Structure formats: C-alpha cells, structure tokens
Image (cartoon, rainbow, N blue to C red):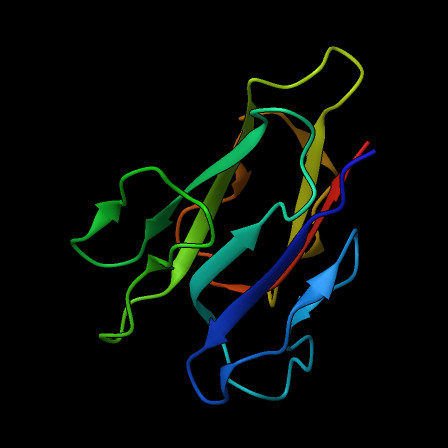
Length: 134
C-alpha cells in the first residue's frame, strides 16, 4: 500500500501544511474568499516506479497547466484559481488506484473520481481537495 501526501496554496492564507490519505487540504469556510491556486502532491513510499502525475485547469486565460509530478507545484498565484484537477498513477501495480474529490463554494463536495478523470467544473473555484490511494 502506498501513502500520498499533498498540500495547497490558498489565495488568502498561502501554503497549508501537508495532509495524508484522504484528509482535506484547503479552507472549507464558505464565508471566506480563500481559494486554491496551487497544488503539490507527493507519493513518498511508492512501490517500484509508481509515480503520481497531476494537472489543473486555471481560471482566466491560463487554462490547462502541463502535467507535473514529484511534488512540483501545479498552478499560479497571479489572481487565477484552480477550477478542475486531474490525477493519475503511472507504472502502478494492478491493485492500486488513485481517487480524489474537490470542494467548491457553490456545490460543496463533489463525488470521488478516479485515475485521470476530471474533478471540478469551469467557473467553480476550488476550496478543498482530498486524495487517496486504494
């Protein structure tokens, strides 16, 4: 079993601390305008060559960011916000998958999504994310 850790950069609060395996990263207080602008994901004890890659769609004219991995930052802090995320495991054993869900001010928690599907929607800035390896 692999563990995953991740953190987000919030527009008002800056970087959160790392959280693990399905915990929430972000600020779910809907009275605050504190939205996710960057994401970092690490897979510290991955089996073999297993790696997590991730990308995000940003508001404004930026659109899709390129795929990143290894804890690199995905996003931007120039008044743009993450609206959609994609995560995928590469070189994984057959018994592992990655699942994730996002929280928006408008819709609350979306359902769990797996292995490279979109989570989020256009014009809905993300406030929280949870990621797990199963």
